[in-house]
Length: 106
Image (tube, rainbow, N blue to C red):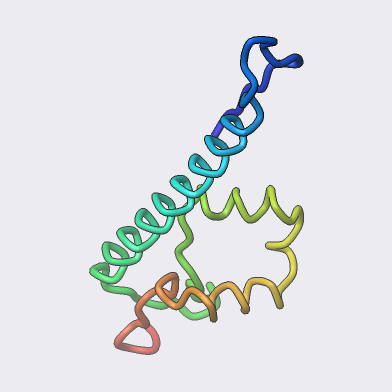
């Protein structure tokens, strides 16, 4: 979301900052709601994909919507490098976990 705020407020507008603040809050709230809906839709589609594992390649841990990933990275730079933060994010957002494969190895 791009926000452009002029350097000076219009002299005839007394509620200028109130309107700007209200619109910012509404925009950020709307962005969070839409991102959560996209994440749930991504998780639903991801659950339909059958998974297979290959020994030595690791395992898929989470499927996160790019906007949610970037929003968290903007709020807390470097947070995704912290393993504890990633575990807590997955714990709090269980819908990002992919389905587990039926067989152990192929």
